[in-house]
Image (cartoon, rainbow, N blue to C red; front, side, top):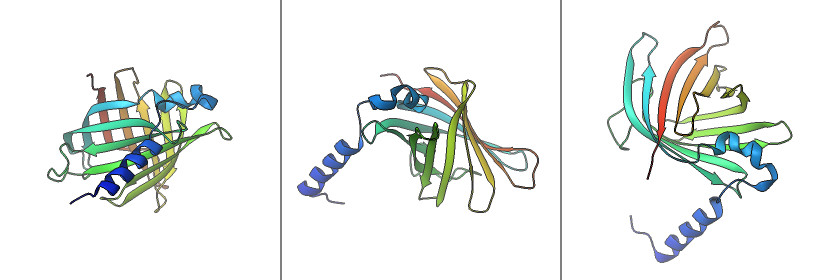
Length: 183
């Protein structure tokens, strides 16, 4: 694909206008809930099948400040490198999350987009003790819970769980162990 000089300039303007250098000062403390993840991460992803099978693959995650520092956006790529053979159970991910702090509800409005798999989720995220828990509902009514646990400056453990309305227990679908990349 050829990109003209005008298109290259437009992309530069787009990136410059989207990205921010840090949190917006108006809610800087609250924005650090997800802002602490800004940077590049290597990940080990384990997909859990309903029959107890497990599949593991490497991946990568990138977090950054966007929209005048009022939001955190990320890109999750699993498996790495992009274009690899299909990851069993969970499929290949090349998606983005936009996390926007809403001071009126003192919580985060979260949207996940993975157009390749046609997966789109809306959730609300809040701190729960030392963890972060995001909850939502799929189009079919299934409940979702995505949690960041074991958070340190250099690592986190992410759990993707689901539960049908009739079920009593959450089912672990995917877990991610992430380590911050160092220059």
